[in-house]
Every structure is written in structure tokens, then in C-alpha cells.
Length: 322
Image (tube, rainbow, N blue to C red; front, side, top):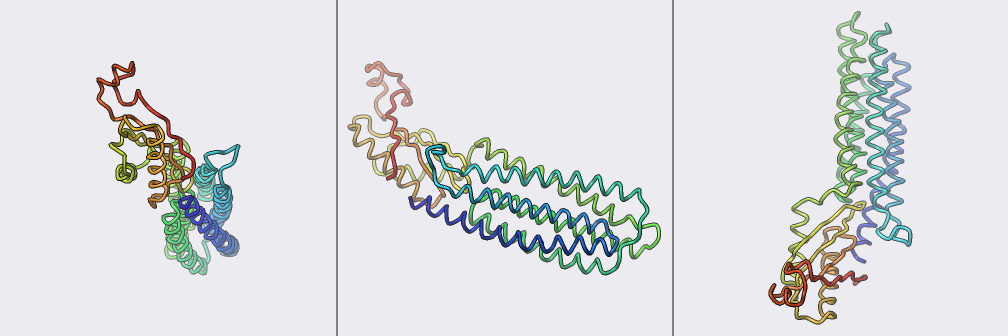
């Protein structure tokens, strides 16, 4: 159970980071909306609304991580890890929805005459960009440490917020420097930022959906799993190896070849050793289903009335916790 305990600690680390993010994002959102209203900057108001969506997204991630921490039970024998992937899907969809909504409002503001933004809004944006970039880097680091897709998506939500703030800064600067006739420059900047947000949202949504759909694990991870299993005493070869992501961990199905003349009890023991080795490998493996294949002369297998291929003479070794 060492691997599952380690993954639980990763999830707890992610939960704590998310709580901190919610508090900071809430304060930033209030500051930006208030500054935008007082300073006549729709780009800053839109930026504040996007920050409020950051808060909602972070709460979704927080909920997903808390559910993912729950151990397997009778209703969910494979655990609750998919809750983390589903949270990532929700956050990516919120990101796309925010891009569409803000783009529509930006277009309305462009065609509606309004005051030029106040100069003090530039100082607010500088502070916002600095804080949001820090949040992005922090959550990105935590997402790598925890192998959490939802945290990675949430991190990019903050990077997108920083980009909208940069765009707003440029737009407001143009409006202030160029003067009359350029009042809508910050709205054009907000529209450009919406395109960046939509691009990131689409990319992150694809990654999240792939996890929900059990997309194949990266080749380098599968090679490391194969190598670890191959080193187990009694394993002749690795026939097949599959892995699918469940939260920050992996569920593995592996077919190993053993000496076909071994008694069932010895083959079963080898399966247990393979399972224990993989779960203790540090690769973030939650559970392993080991399928034994006999490594024997095909002619002998044929005379026994079985398929000559190794996969036709299998002894399931769905071993329990080692």
C-alpha cells in the first residue's frame, strides 16, 4: 500500500495548494472589478470576472482532489481517481465559456462609446500580473509533484488570467497615450486575450477528456513498467503492458511469461512479486492486474489442444495486496 499512501499525500498537497489559490484569487477578483468600475476600464472589469471564474475553477479542482483521495470501496473498486480528471474537464469548459462570454461583451463595448480608462488602473494590472504569474508557476510545480491534470489545467487558468491582464495593460496604455478616439483600445486588448484563453481551454480540454477516455500511457512510462517487471525473478518475458490514468496514479494491466512447467502456486507467487515490484517502483502505480502466460514449446501447447500462441494458455493471477 506504500504507493497508494504516497499518492494520497500528493493529493493532500494539491488540496492545500488549491485552498491558498482560492483565497488569493478571490482578493484579486474584488480588487480588479472595483478598480475597473472606478477607473472606467471594461478590460479590467472583464479581467476581474475572469478571476472570479478562477475561484470557481479552483473550488471545482479542490472538490475533485478531495473525492479522488477517497479509498476504493464496494461501489468504486478502482478508486475515485477519475473525479480529478472530471474536475479538469469542468475547469477547461469554464475556461472556454469565459472566453466566449468575455469576447461577446468586448465586442459590445467596442461599439459603445465610453470614457478612457484612468491611469491608476495600470498600476493595478502590474500587481495582478505579478501575482497571477506566481500562482501559475506555483500550481505548475505542484501539478508536476502530484501528477495532477486538474491542477495543471487550473495553473493555466491563472496564466490565461495573467495574459488578459497584460493585454489590458497594453490596451489601456494605448488609450491613455493616443487619447481621444482610442478609448476602446483596452476592449480590443480584452478581445485578443479571449482568443488566447480559448486556445488554452481547447488544448487543456483535449488532455482532460483523453484521461477520462483512458488514453494510452506515454511510451516512456510503459517501458519503465516493462523493465521493472522484467527484473522480477521468474519472469521470462513481458508480452503485453497497458496503463491508464486514475487521478494522479496509474492502473496497470500486464501479461508476463513464466516457465510453463511451473506449478500454479509458483506462478501465482511470481505474479505477486511483479505486482509488489511495480507498486513499490515509485512510478505512481495504484494497482496492477497480472496475467500469466506460459513460456513453453508451441508444439507441446498444440498437442494439449490449445492455441499455439502464448496468449491462448493463460492463468489469471489477479493477486490481492502483496
